[in-house]
Length: 291
Length: 306
Image (cartoon, rainbow over all chains, first blue to last red; front, top):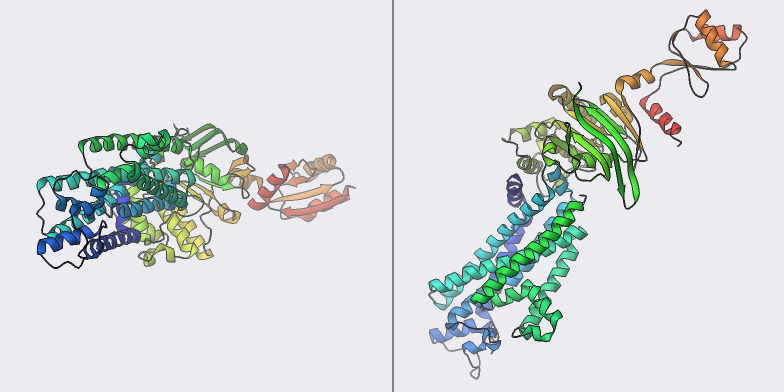
């Protein structure tokens, strides 16, 4: 408990955390501007403005030959949209859009926090206080993950409310429930990415390797999954395992609005399995590691 | 029976097939101040890290308060304060915030202890200044304050006087001695300033290339280093007999290299020289000497083969 309190104190006292909050807020502002202002004939971002214009019966500044329909959205193009309410779907997707940016920010922060504590010998100081290494690492991870999670949830819900007001859409209980569930599932996937980053920091005592590897892992899965999402196992076992084991796959599904019962279950099993594996390796490494 | 704060039994430590420590046997009674003396790379910091639990022994056992902590019994380390290698501080936090974090981590109730240690290391006036803006000496004092927080029973200080000016060295030394006297705090301290250790330590442990050369109390060291007369003559046995019979000197010692050491008649060396010469012996050297800790350490190193 003392370790958890200590980590909260560190968050409270450190300027770096303030910077993280400011950056996340800036990301949200950027996302608002992007979603509302962006115009094109078939982009992901145009749909929000299109709905607004259709509802308001305002003359569209989008070229007349542009076909404005829910089918313009990437969700529809990729066949991922299983929702019946396109407006709700687009608000959800727009609010979830910056998820991957938040994940990058948290990933970099988590790696930096651990590598800094290694270089400043802060873990050593906790051991001097009689704490076990695993406890030290887990409490740091938990506190920071929860803190990042709060920032993420607040920002995303803020975006969702903004877009709902902007488009004049009244969310149903199901919409809100779906959003909250998606946020929690995203946090589970964040935890997998962050754990992998922390594990790499534990091995290398350096944040750069962890950040680069995880960003590559994330983007590679994020890039290839849309291309082969229908039946990725048909592309070979290696591709299948890679896609299955990447949290990017699940994040992609969640942010695209494909939150079926099957996806939820798969994600929960996957998240638990990966966290156990990653932290299991961490336990073994920490047992032998001299700090 | 004397209670032991620390006991290391046949401790070996190797890293990547290199022996760092070999057969370390060290026993520190409660309330003692043990000065760990050795050259750079001798293994002082490694011993401290093993005791503090950040490093592991290859074989052997470590006991703190008679409890085996070799396999990481962390509870016994709760009453320890450590400053090993360099102070562990967040540079973007103030001194007070750094100490507050340590206070919470150690589970010490009440924030008064922070002001107490800040005062003790003379940092109370700059408590709200970012630690990153501190000078080397101020950071070192903050490190000492962190180690001191919560009145630990056992303090491990690795080169604590590094970067401190003479006034602060005196200040910190007096504070440590006061802590040791008032709270019976056991202190394991290393320093390259042997004179400084001489002012504080109640026992010494000389370490060289991963071996403990000698572990002695201050009393024993004072005994060995006490003032004496060194004499070199052509016939050691006969001169000893004459000094015993004619001058009635009883405290005579003959060293391995054939030197006679007298521990009496320190004020009248001319009588001794006259006696030797008048009895027909050749006197090569006669000098009144007192060994310092540094001389003693150097002679230990010489006898160790360096």
